[in-house]
Image (cartoon, rainbow, N blue to C red):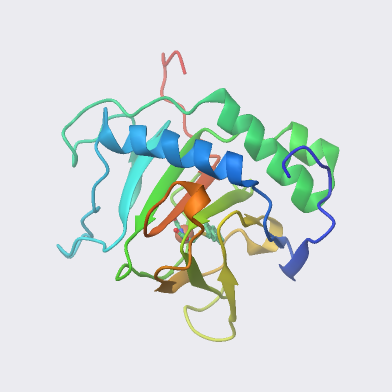
Length: 225
Ligand code: MD3
Ligand code: FE
């Protein structure tokens, strides 16, 4: 329920890492699925980003505001047809502020949260994401994560090593996770998708969608954005 401040059933998994199960209602989930389906078609089509070693990721990604490829952000998608990436919509920034409010219950932190990019990841039943840190951004503002569709095993680690200690938890359709403070640069990954567990009412027939909003801290000179 995105209108509420300081969600009642929030869980602090680690300092600054807050899980809010069932935060998005079914109507919001369906609206986001519909919007992501449009963005996946273009102007930059959803694709599997290719790692520097030449291996494509099993996850498929489309971006808003800034185009991410391992390991940098640009305005145009040189690795995916060359178009200028779709605008990061103000309604999504507002949803991000509501998410920060639900997680931290801090109106100040919520009001000043101005995400300028979203990475939209689609996982089929076989897709995985290995343990990694998100450090291509030039800002340390929180990352807001929204999960829709099939449930997954989410592995939340620590900022120092790719290995243990970590906390394994299940993320379900509608769940919110906010990663800020000391958790912003923690290692994390998605070792498994639980195929066929998503609710039909999300509008996603199969697979898992994850939307992460971020503050890049980037701005090119003379840009109107
Ligand atoms: C913790 N995505 O896009 S979301 C990613 O489910 C990514 O698609 C996963 O990791 C997914 O980079 C995990 C949870 C998440 C996202 C960003 C984080 C956790 C994070 C950044 C810092 C710490
Ligand atoms: Fe990540």
